[in-house]
Image (tube, rainbow, N blue to C red; front, top):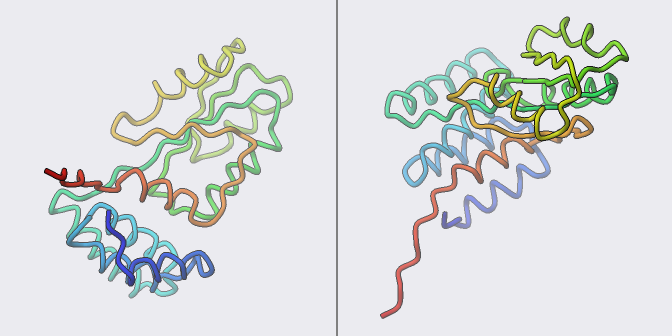
Length: 188
């Protein structure tokens, strides 16, 4: 993607004002023609950070229009492993919830046979798809178990349970995932 001066300025401003719905909307407006999937992501964040219902409805109209044109971006399934680290996993989940709209992600937590009360606590989390392994299947086995339980339409992100998501982290990852790089013309 070729970033023009306006896009670069908006991206820079988002680093210092990561909760500005107006900045996300402005970036979405600039991206609509060259990369409508990235524009979709911008409008999702604009809606998440909007202050009024009227603003949210306006951004939803942008999202509905882009989706009708085939430019909807699927949510992300976070695959998170836990083994006797309830508090660390709680901090990870809290950070995801704090900085991301609920419709943009799915939480799949694989518990690898914890004995610290993690399983019971995870069962109380209404937005968590729990994979309750009865043996510790290790990292690779646990990740594979989580991927099998994730929505097959979603993008998959493996996330360590000691990760704390920061503002714009998921947005930035998804923007890069949906970057539409055109091959450079070859010199003849």
